[in-house]
Length: 201
Length: 247
Image 1 (cartoon, rainbow over the protein chains, first blue to last red):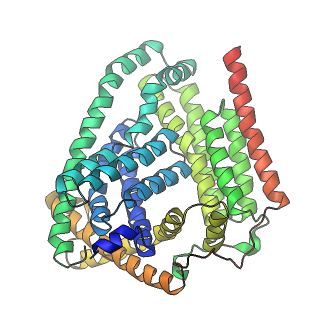
Image 2 (image 1 turned 180 degrees about the vertical axis):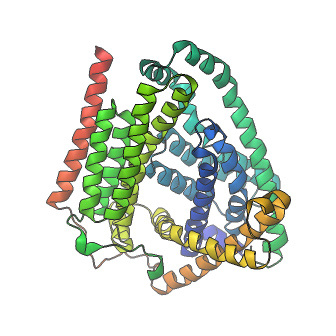
């Protein structure tokens, strides 16, 4: 339980350690989400969805356990940093940092207690993995050129690019948002059922 | 905190790099791989990483990763030369994705597993990283192995109560299974956080004065060599890219 004086003081060592551990848990959930679909070539586009589905409870726990400005930003930077180290595209890592700040501000506007705002802030935060696939759309020409140079039939590539990829980006974002709502609500329910009753958060 | 440390084999390590150099290598390696102009370039870069890994003491990990990478390259070659149609597109796309990710994961794994916590914290202090970043980062890196351990215990406990996290139970009772995994996992994470922060506060982590470290952190000739080597690589890839763009 935090009283008003402690909130003013900013993050204590205890908060920082809790953030670190929960960030590790978030990271593991995200990696499991990645691993479910990441190994199949075409299904790889479903990765952001499974990540959004898995990370909700941990995100809600971070917000509930440390209701201050900062932990979400730190989590964003850490997760982005680790993903960068693991060799993901830089666009995704940057998205984690920036969207982390946005999500933190949004959750903070409801004093980290408003369920609706926490949910929306999770929806914002979890869009970040989509940005790694965004490269396919932003840098499509070089990608297509590369494949064609390597001997893929241009006609086949054309149809694949024009039909599949244009509707896939919005579809992916909508899918992520839906998954985020499901996962976030589940997380809030779990917190209410188990953690609040036990007096942990 | 001792339990959280990954075993390092210092006695077999010929190369002992400064954590700051490692950070630099990671960033440069990542960018170089992103800009990599050809397959040959990538393979040479990976060869450098393998040599670095073997010299730094993470032999088993490096060899394993190198074998997987070699398999990936062979698959890519087969895909581009001998296959046609949809199968080729699928395989080439897949291997290109993996090849962009894999070497960095390798480099990251080597560097993290050969760095000790206290050295890492000292080096981060030296580059004036704020405390709000250093502490969560260190805790996070060392908590990763624990997550797996915790999961194994939870799995055992769940099987004992007949709610084991199998595929069928995930289909028949999705909510209950998920709940049975998440709640103990998060509970134990919070408990570890409490214990760790108690231990850390007792050892004076809240002390506002600058941190001191018994292990000396300084750059050596090997640091310079590695840094220069990777920078040259990066420069090479940029040069090729610019030349290709002009011509």
